[in-house]
Image (cartoon, rainbow, N blue to C red):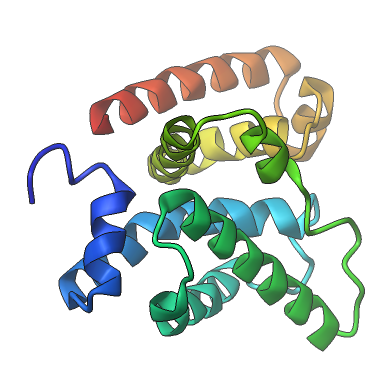
Length: 191
């Protein structure tokens, strides 16, 4: 695979829908951290209670694998939109199976709102950047990843993060700063 292709989902998607098993495996591997981020975001602040995020990611990956050939448009924005719907539905089904109703709107339109006014090339770049950031986030040490997720996915203040994880607000700010620096290095390394 050429250097410029290994960091893009488009070529993997094209090869995957043509039946290339190696490309399917590589595509699913590239999507896995993104799926973990989507699942954590949709489970909410309590982590979904008894729901297992890894199990939900696995279910989502299986649905993606089985349905990849039926994807109407073979574009990265269409793929990521479809993946988002799959994750949303898997999480909703898990809440229902658990006998609970989702505690917040799981089908947020944030992804669609971000896409308004963007050219297809800009949408593809934004979506691929989101996948790279999710992959880099998964490579952070657990405590750094937790601080970033609590701050940016759950919109908690430093004081709330401090209460949840322990330590001082100053320590949380320093940890977040270091985590952002590391995230930037990891993301730039994959570009």
